[in-house]
Image (cartoon, rainbow, N blue to C red; front, top):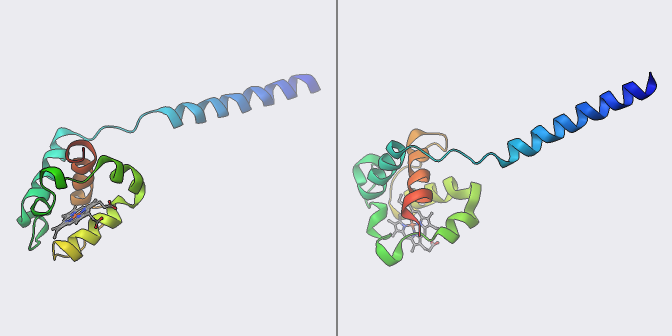
Length: 114
Ligand code: HEC
């Protein structure tokens, strides 16, 4: 009986651990093409973010944001985007959970950065 309890417990434990490993390895969903397009427009035109200078003004061709810096920034990307909106583009910070922020991050991560 005691043996049964122990093996049942380890079975549960390994199931939970297995699920954890599986969940860890499921790749994050690639953003939709629509979200990337929206981000591209926000990046290239000043109207969407209501800024004085569009991001593209400084981030053209060889000045494009580097993939390695985006990877290094990780979860801090929204903070840095807002820093650039306010300090470089002379606009108002946007909410980190806003549609605009999601679109900008998707565009920068999956299309813009090289
Ligand atoms: C006036 C010029 C200018 C504008 C406008 C500008 N940036 Fe930048 N940005 C820079 C420069 C210069 C760098 C590289 C040096 C640095 O990290 O500050 C940079 C770097 C970055 C980085 C990488 C930061 C890092 O740690 O390597 C991100 C992300 C970024 N910009 C996003 C944006 C976004 C989004 C916009 C538009 C809202 C924008 N920038 C507008 C000049 C600008």
